[in-house]
Length: 306
Image 1: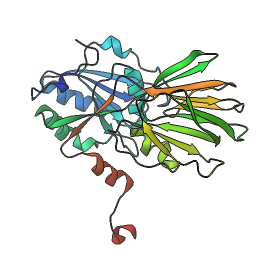
Image 2: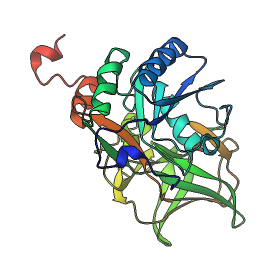
Image 3: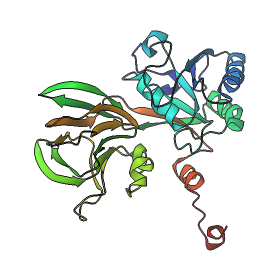
Image 4: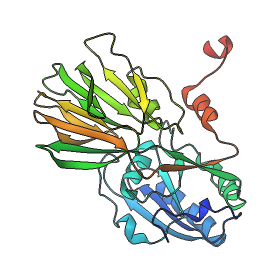
């Protein structure tokens, strides 16, 4: 069995006897009770369930008690929490990505799109085969120091270069397939996936991209040159970000987590990863319904006045 294979991808429906892992943070309220409730419902339906709690802050890596590869074949991962919990889970799965169903116990929940009171209905729809799997682009990054990788990994939302203390402008040279494209001068640069277009990039003035596109979004942070606007390019290219003279506090930040401080001449290399990040979508949840709910798109003056 391939490490990335899931029987949810089979054309045979409904799937039965799935191997499910329920993931949650021990520090989030209601996670334990929700995990027990969902586990009981799944086991009653004949599925094999493992519960894996992570400790510590959501932005910290490596806090699961077991490596994901040690769990054997897995068909579905159910994440209880917010989008941060899903990002941490995707990092935990690494190159062995399997379909994810996000149950929102956090605040906004673009990725954790389902509410706790929808769990049973959603599980029933999955059991009946009324779902689809939506693959999303993952970025693979490496920080090259003196030509050798000093850090590397995967990003669901974005790879960012932030100027940091003492908060003066830095230069970031962007090379596309070994050709210099431009030099950004400002507070940093966000290299975002379409999934990440509704995260840090959106706050910085970037556009919203449909989540299943294979493109990369570049959003400069407070650029010195006002013509440096967000740019979209093909995910199949290789992107090198060179920082000739970083500040003392300049850093590479991936999905909200500081990966490494930067030294003069460091290169952050970004390209499309081989695996995809996959979300389960049912009939009652889709791309635009999520945007309407999370961004409060009212569609009229009456709604706007509320």
